[in-house]
Amino acid sequence: MPELPEVETVRRGLTPAMEGRRILRAEARRPDLRFAFPERFAERLTGTVVERLDRRSKYLLARLGSGETLLMHLGMSGRFSVTADDLSRQPGDFVYAAPANPAHDHVVFHIEGGVTVTYNDPRRFGFMTLYETDHEDAQPYLKALGPEPLSNGFSEDRLNDAFKARRSPVKAGLLDQSVVAGLGNIYVCEALWRAKISPRRLCNSIPGVRSARLAPAVRDVIAEAIEAGGSTLRDYAGADGAMGYFQHRFDVYGREGEPCHRCEDSRVERIVQSGRSSFFCPSCQR
DNA sequence: CCGCGGACCTGGGGGC
DNA sequence: TGCCCCCAGGTCCGCG
Image 1 (tube, chains in turn yellow, brown, cyan):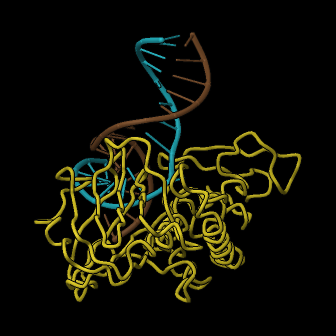
Image 2: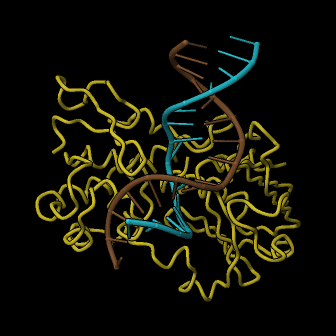
């Protein structure tokens, strides 16, 4: 579920349920997700107001009145559901259906106004932690992140700098969160298709004409995916947490054996790179 | 320092 | 129907 566009979609969905509201009670129903929860986790959340809900890369950052930030990562299978007494009455408000298996409801926030936000994560690759907001520069998960793909910090020049001395395949280069933050397997495959670059091509051969195609391809696919996710918020109820409808616009991801959308005489191939599937058109991606 | 493979978990789908 | 293997949107750690 969660690359940058999905996490941004979740952020927008959770905002009306959480922002400006007090957490009356928090429950951690087990001692850990991927990692142990921090000391007194539930107690530190209880009674504080969520002043703002931010996102950095694939991390959700709840700014708390206590001076701490609650950092949340959805891993591979993390989902939030929201139930509310009154939220669903407002246009644009956001209510997720309850997830399928309550055995994996690991964290529950009881929020003022009759709102309940539940974190469900079957695989438990997600995690949550708390840190002093004033010390965010030292936060280990955030410290090494590269620029947001939609920010001014991400550009053709940025790719040139990051890739010129790098010998790994560009697929791995774009998955490196210190190069550009927030891409995952799907959007890397899609961006490389748009830029007509083979996932096997080495990073150090990207600077130049290919960076000039790749930077806008990354930006465009992320922006379009956010747009697609945002426009289908209300359809999430009862469905997979954050797919939006961008899945119907994939050009290569999950399309092994199907025709390339650019060259009709060629079919999408799947290869494995660093243990993960890469989908690409061997004809137009070089 | 870099790059890769394995580990961490559970569930769904396909093949037999 | 049951079982087994493969696959999955992420990240960290240890090895070479």
